[in-house]
Image (cartoon, rainbow, N blue to C red; front, side, top):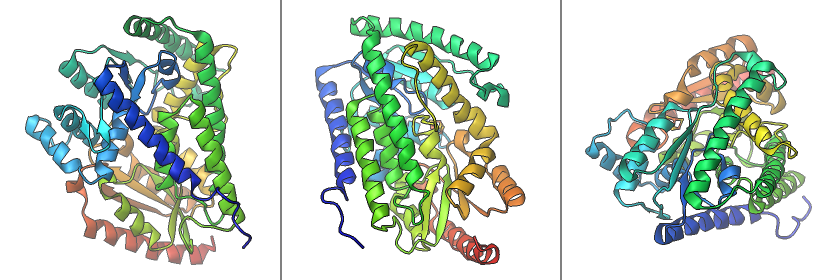
Length: 428
Ligand code: SF4
C-alpha cells in the first residue's frame, strides 16, 4: 500500500464536525439576538431562496435526530406525550415538541424561535407539525403545494404536465418571496439568488460524485454512517461556498481511500442498500449488527430522498433562476413521493446493478407512514423479479422504546446466513 497523501484522510470528519458546530453556534446566537430564523424541512427546504434573505435555517428533523443520537430522545418524547401527543405521532415531531417545551434547549445548543415556517406537502406530517409552531409562536406558516401523483409521465421534464406543475409552483414561490421581503425588510436580490443556485449546482455534482465512489469494491464509506453527515451538511450548507468546498474535500478523501484500498467495513463481505432510515436512538448498534457480518451499506434511499433531492444530473439553469428552481422542486417532489412510494423498485433495480449490491434492508419506521408504506411489497418485487434478497425489520427513527434488540438481531443474523448461501449459489 502506498503512503497516504498528507492531510487528506480524516479531514472530512473534522470538517463535518466544524461545520455542524458552526451551524449550532449560529442558531444559538440567533436565539439570543432574534435574527430572523426560518424553520424548514429536509424535503423542499428552499434553502437557496431563504439564504438570499439571510435567514438562519433550522431543520427540526436534524435537531430531533441529533437528540436521539445523543441518547436523550426518550425524555423529550415523554415530555411531548405528557403534553398530550399520542404515542403513534411521528417521533421527530415529539422530540421537537419536547425541545420547544424546554425553550429550545438542545444537547448541542439553543434553537431560536421561528420568524417564518416554510413547508411543503411532501409529507403530510410537515403541515401538522408546522401548525404546532404556529400555535406556540403565532409565526407565519407558508405551505408550498408541490403537485404529487401524476403517474410516470410527470417525470418527463419536457412534458406538458411537468411544465404546468412548474408554473404552478413558481407562482407560489413569488408569493413566498413577498412574504420574506415583508419579514426581513430586504428586497429580493435575484443575482444573489443566482449565486446560491450556482453553489447548489456545484454541491449536487460533487454529492453525486461522492455517491458514485461507493460503487468501488470495497466501498470507501458507509452510506448509513458517513452518509448521515453528508446528508446533514448537504442540507445545512446547500447553496453556500462552505458546502461545495466540503464535498470537494469528501470526494478527494474517498478517492484517496480507494487508491489506498481502504474499506469502510474491514473485510467487506456483503454490499447492502438501506431503504428508510436507521434507528437513530440505537445508531451504533444498528450499524454494528450489519458490520459484524462484513455488511456495508453502499447506498440508501435517504441519500437521495432526504439528501435534498440531488438526483443525478441535477442542475439549475442559471439563465432562468426562479423558473428553474420551481422545476427542480417539482422533479424532486416527484422522486420524493410519487417515485419513491410507487416506483421505488426502479431506483433499487438500478442501484443493485450499478453498486454491485447483494441484499436490501427495508427498515419500517413505526411512527413514519410516509417512508414505510409499501416496503414489504417492494421487497417481494425485488426478490421475485430480480432475485435480490431483502430483510424487513421494524423499529423507529428516534423512539428507543420501539427498539427490540433481540428481535432485530435475530432477523439480521438469519438474513446474513441466508444471504451467504444465496451469494454462494449465485456467485454474486
Ligand atoms: S417523513 Fe416521516 S419522519 Fe419525516 S416528518 Fe414525515 S412522518 Fe415524520
